[in-house]
Image 1: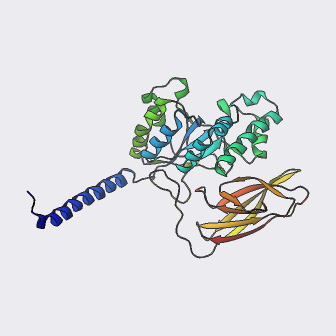
Image 2 (image 1 turned 180 degrees about the vertical axis):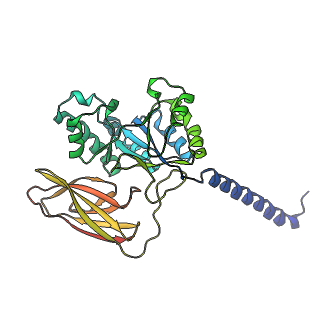
Length: 334
C-alpha cells in the first residue's frame, strides 16, 4: 500500500519524468528537422490534385517529414475539392495552376488556352483567396502562344529538371533514386495520386538532409527553387511572421497592361509583419491577386493585403473600366 503522505511526492516525481520525456522527445524532433541548407534548395512538385483519395495522406506525410512542396492543381479538381485546396494552403504548401481539364494545350487556340488557365485561377482563388503565380503546362507541352497567355495572366511557367516517372509506374525505390539526382535550384515532377509517391517521401527527406539540401519554394521570378521567404516552420507549416512594431513602406510598380486591365506590384520594406491597404476608385475593380492574402470591405473598393509566406512583394490586376488612375496604397505593421 502507498503511504498517503508520500503520494504527492510520488505524483510530483511521476510528472517530472513525463515532462522530461516530453522535452526529450520534442528536442529529438527538433534535431530531426534541424535544417542545414548549405547546399541549397530544391522544388518538390506534385501535379494533378487535389484528389480526395490521396491528397490528405500526401499532405500529412509531407508535414511529418518536415517538407513543403508546390501543388500544381487541375482546376476542375480544385473546384470540386475546395476544402482540400485550403488544406494544401494550411499545410504550408504553395499552390500552382495546372490548367482546368489537363488538355494538350498546344493543340488549342489562344482563347481556349486562356479559358483553361483563367478558370483555374478563379477556382483556386475562390478556395484560398489568392490566385497562383506559377503554372505548369500539362505534359510539359508549351509554345509561344501559351507563353503569351501565361504572361497575360501574370503566370510563370514551371517545367521540371527531374522526372520521377511515378506516372509511368516507377516504384518507390525508383522515385527516391530520381529525387537523389536533384541539385540546387532544380525541380522534380511527381504526382498527387500515387501511393508509391507518398511512400517515397520519408526517404526523399532523409536523402535531402544527408546532402544539406532543403525543400524550397519556386520563385515566381525565375521558376527555380529558392529559400522560402522569411524562413518557415521546420515541420512544414505556414511561415509565422515576427512580432509587429515599427513602420513599413509600400512601393508600387507598374507591371503589364492591356486594353482593359493592368497589373501593379507592391513591395513592402521595413517589416515582414505588414498590412497593406489598397483603395481603388470605382468603376475600377481588382480581379486577380498573388503572393498575399486579401480581404475586402463591404464596398469592394478597399482591399487589405497580408503576407501569406511568399515574401514581401505582392501583386494584383485591376480591370480599369475607363479609369487608369493607380489606387492609393498605405502600409502599417501588425
